[in-house]
Image 1 (cartoon, rainbow, N blue to C red):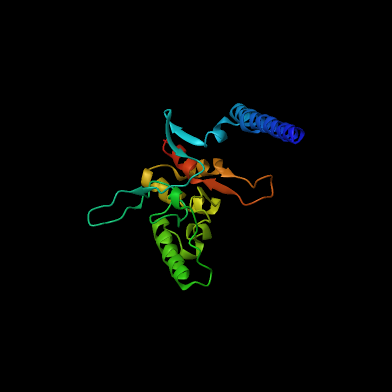
Image 2 (tube, rainbow, N blue to C red; image 1 turned 90 degrees about the horizontal axis):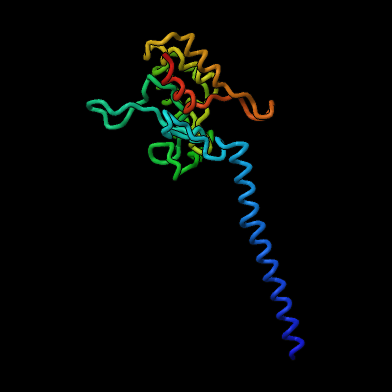
Length: 209
């Protein structure tokens, strides 16, 4: 009986020692090591890719947002501000770009509601940017899977250059050069598509004179 009890105690003590060792290794040492490496090598990415204005956090380059102007007299909802590059539509939340409601519309390509919505968006974007409806890129009228994507295609960014430049009284060539500096290539040279981060682009646009 005593031998059996001692055997059980030894097994429990061994298990307890293993628990303590792995708690220290995986619960303390490993997180501290990963955090230290991240802060030392990639501090911007490790801290949320926060964009700052005069040292004050104003946005994250990882999360898209709307660039609207306040409702005018007689309007009940904000409208896109022509002074800024506009992001793609968002289905996250009631008004879009809600981090607490990330997701897509879940409407298929044959859904009549989606087809009407895309047609309405295409007409609105074409009128807003002063282009033909047929030249409006697909990402200008369709939401991303997360609803929080801050990136648009270079085609959509360049389409907005003339409108932004005219509204701000800037040289369109200078605005186009600014867009070109924000075009990110494919990951590893072959994954995904080229893109433009609208949040970062608008942040630098504000400083363009």
